[in-house]
Length: 252
Image (tube, rainbow, N blue to C red; front, side, top):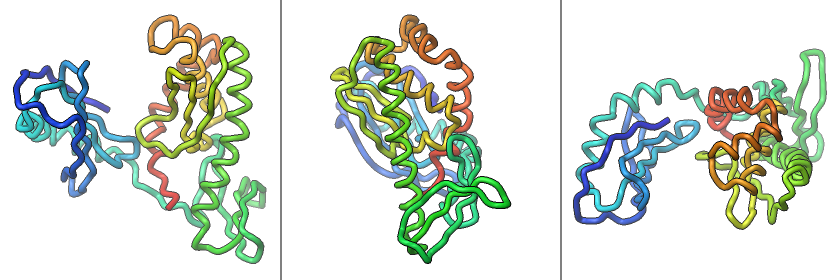
């Protein structure tokens, strides 16, 4: 989510990155002000899950202009943040999507700590053993293992199709993006994507692998992305529509 207006260049030049807090809609959120030499206007973005704010500014913009920009778009922020879903805590009894299928989290403390898929009279379940205190972490660890297994296999398939090699594959809990590809060929993915339907997981991998050949979002990139994942448009729309809800789930 973003909103911007064209800048009026001014001095003095601010630091490249400023970190502070900003109060909006009764919440205090971390705010990052990032200077970008290629920016021609101010842009404001709400991080996935409503966990923070980011403003990108052109070089040479007065700090006061940033404050005016925030004041002018306070209503916009309040409106958007009101639509951000609550941040549910992972706990026994809630339903957590795994590959898009809701699974009830069942806690069985009598066994050694682990997590495994299963099924009971209510439907699909994720059974988590061990101390209740560590349940959220064990659920996150389960998703990380599933991500590593499935995504590495998808990367192998798609890199073979494009004739490129991934230098490294990393898994993170990022809030600003679902995946990334560096010019050196390093791929990164948010392990939270394992809560999305399988076609969306495949789309994300296809998207980042396509960047190994096309480091842009131009026509050739999207053509290649659709060759790797014919369902690109539907999956991209699903992630845009539902991504915030997945990012809002708390595993701490």
